[in-house]
Image (tube, rainbow, N blue to C red; front, side, top):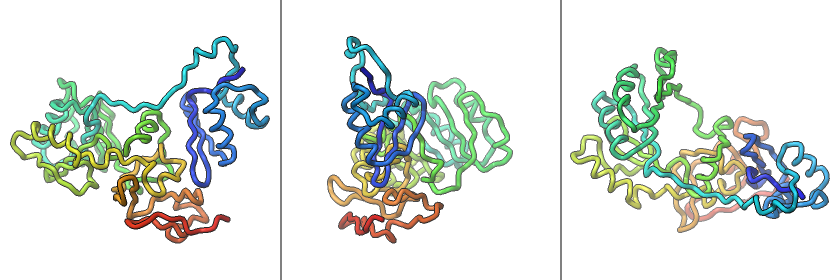
Length: 317
């Protein structure tokens, strides 16, 4: 008897599918007809060699995706279910730097609300000051400084402080696809960009993310911590948190949907359907990125996605 690894995941797209193995951190592009058989095997979990197409069985064995086991230990392999859980109400605070006083207030918010990750966009070299401000605090647990300052980029990372260069490429691109378990699970239930985030701009405006329209408070407000606790618990602030890719036009047909972090603001058509006004840089109906040969846009292909409808008006080659 053989058992299929519980670390496998299969994501079916319109044109092709992705088979992932979290244990080895490997991704394999596969045809959709192969995906049908692999999906059946994952559901079945326990199998015999003759249950599988010979070439496919060899592939699964070679890549350590199935293991031979004695039948009498079958019950030692319980079914693994996807479950998303976070002990934090807010996971990330993103701050566009304006003043040192603003830094103090932002760090205080992280400490009082228990926000583990602080991301600061700045070009002023105040790394030493930030290091001093957080050294005796439990939160934030980590600070990421995003900058274009060449002097700062030459600095070494500090304890709890990571210095990284601002990426000016489109938000979603081929290199931005990230295969990690936490993101994968979160993406099944939530919008992985808007979920559990709070943004503070350089004028002190407080929103869900930089791209969000609604402003809920300002860094200068009195009793800000008390206000924030109510704000981040409100349905209005969390409106986009649960808009996962499975209910978004086009994204639901993409094999990268659980590995892609997308900052486009989804718009609502009805209770269960959402769409984007701007196109992604990947077209799942032809399996091509924008910079690849033979790429065509959704509009050119005949995909309609707007406030009224979602339809595929094209003939496959």
